[in-house]
Image 1 (cartoon, rainbow, N blue to C red):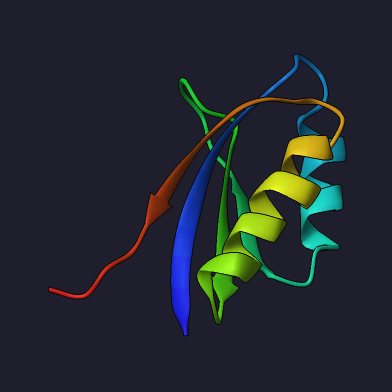
Image 2 (image 1 turned 90 degrees about the vertical axis):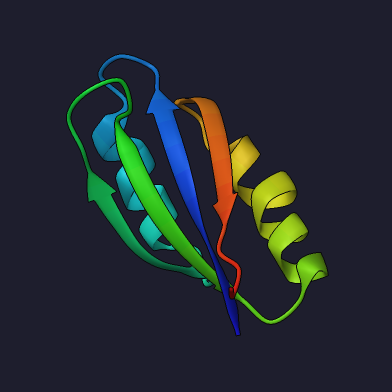
Length: 77
């Protein structure tokens, strides 16, 4: 199983709404509220790149209140 961290910037005042919607997604294993330039960090676990793409493109990008995301895909070294 592979994993990725999603760095999320939300529209002002929408952090809690986005947080709760992300927790409902099957691939999302955890979400944390953070302070600073970003608002949330979510971890997704996936079995294939197709599953990761579906989660990012079809689910996360359609969450109302998400302004910007950056995806960090974990790799083995």
